Image 1 (cartoon, rainbow, N blue to C red):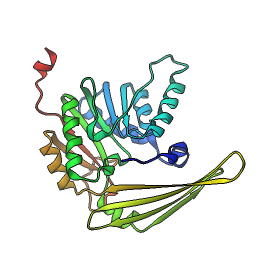
Image 2 (spheres, rainbow, N blue to C red; image 1 turned 135 degrees about the vertical axis):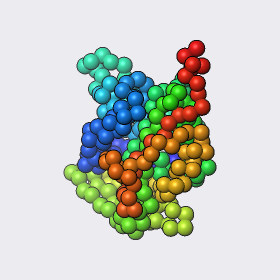
Image 3 (cartoon, one colour; image 1 turned 90 degrees about the vertical axis):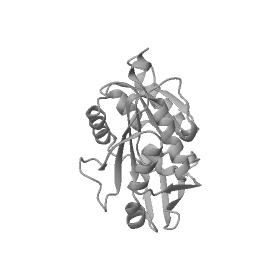
Length: 262
């Protein structure tokens, strides 16, 4: 779970090809379809806060949780800069492990994007995340998260090397996928130019696990959440065999609205 230390400094530079606003539009559509038009929303694995801030701009009160202090430092700075002119209260960012996160109360929805859930390598630990989500959701609250698929690791990423060069930074990203464990190992080499013009090299190793849709559904239902459905990412179409990213929707069950209101 420890990742994105040095990469946090340049994460947004290398991720500027991700259409966060379009992804946010899709996420908001799913939230509103399930009755979450406003209110308090938690993002798990919020990283540098790109989606958290986008959801805030859509009118949601946001909490962001991430296990990387470096990524959260970038998120907090971003939040403070965006609120300096408006005087709005910055997003609440918490440095916590999503496998054991704690809140002071419940939220209307929990979201997690950019394959954060794939970083949970053990099904038992993913089950614990789902149980915590169910615990901290309002009655009938909604949980939406995405996943990279096994197809993506096997056919797209596995055994591939990706490289990119920018003006002051570059990276080499090697992928090794193990079919037995369904774990993809990312070896990320970063080259960051310093003030003296020389490049410093940093290496990070990340791990993500592929989960089958049936396995996710079993874990969702075992956690107490209610399965709502799954979509091929950014569509309303069913998951396909060649889907590279999918969205899962689940709902809280077990709490009484009457009890909560009292």
